[in-house]
Image (cartoon, rainbow, N blue to C red; front, side, top):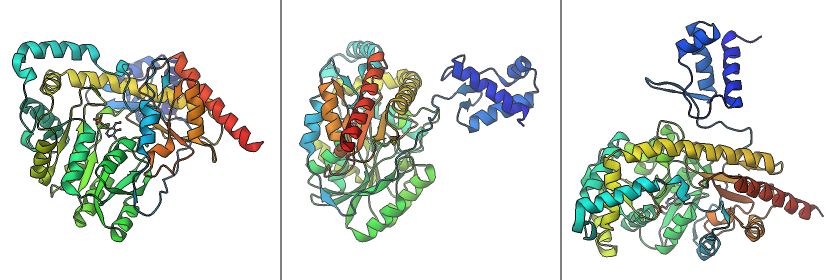
Length: 477
Ligand SMILES: Cc1ncc(COP(=O)(O)O)c(C=O)c1O
């Protein structure tokens, strides 16, 4: 027998499923619900609490209950990864360039990129800000700015970082040409060519490219699709190998979507500080959480300045403005020298545009809207894959970012799937690109959800599912 509050909760779910209330909509207040349904206020409250526990709805302080941006589908997730247990040199990255940068044909359905489509970017507000900034700053927009980067931009970033419990000030921030550049500077400041860097497995190929270009090696550590890098495996690796730094994507890893829980973030800092090993934290997706509460940053637990925090506005405001930042902790002087030697300055106009955008509240307004957009896009893609792909497919269901990591049935060759799909104008990122030697993840693909949803995208996902079925049949025959 069901309790009354469960029946009330079922009713609300039915309304959500019929589309009466959509993702992000505010639900009736507790009192209105009690009047509407002729139930007590405490029953209404219990119904909402039940739905909150199920992740269907979300309470927002002093605002009420909202339909969650995201609801998980019943589909299994991939197991924790099992990479090779020895360090190796990064190889084969020119293949990544051929596969993904070649895919720039406007007619294609590009599910392979890790950059957002322009539809997800605040293009008009950015255009308006650009005009304003040129009017306001005149000649200075085209001059060089400080070595550390534009002061107002650093101040704006520092303000946001304080909200994340990182108390470093504007002078502890170095503006970079995107997050990749920040990671490169962090690696060069902490390690030497030939050193071994512990990384998550799988990881973003762009980070592998940076490691390769620095002449360093990687040791891939098993990583869980939700909880992130295995601390147990990392601890063993630290005892066994001469690891000189650890590089992790703390929130909504690309491609896994993992987001380390707070206690693991804290434990990671403690473990690395015990071994006196710097941690390079890449947090380019943290602002793209589907929940209203942004996940924490690992740096907030660092006591010894051994965390070098890297991020950028490439996934939120613009991949093309190439503005990121690095909070290098105790490695500041080294990073500053490296920046001076490598770039001297970062483009002034681009920094002014972003500083102005942040200062006038455009960023937070935009984030509120785009988080919902990504949540919907991820939910639709997950639903389509669970519908169109054959049994035995597993996938992640991240709660932020826009990457989905899909495990195809055993034996399916993702490179062959990529080859066939590209002939049909569909681009995907095959799994091997996310491993150091491109020998792992042969039956995985990454799908990007930063593509505006359309019938064409839905048909492309159906086509991909059919191609996977063909590949299964060819193996049987
Ligand atoms: C985890 C991660 N780090 C860094 C980057 C690159 O960022 P940027 O364009 O700011 O260099 C990406 C882009 O895909 C990414 O996924």
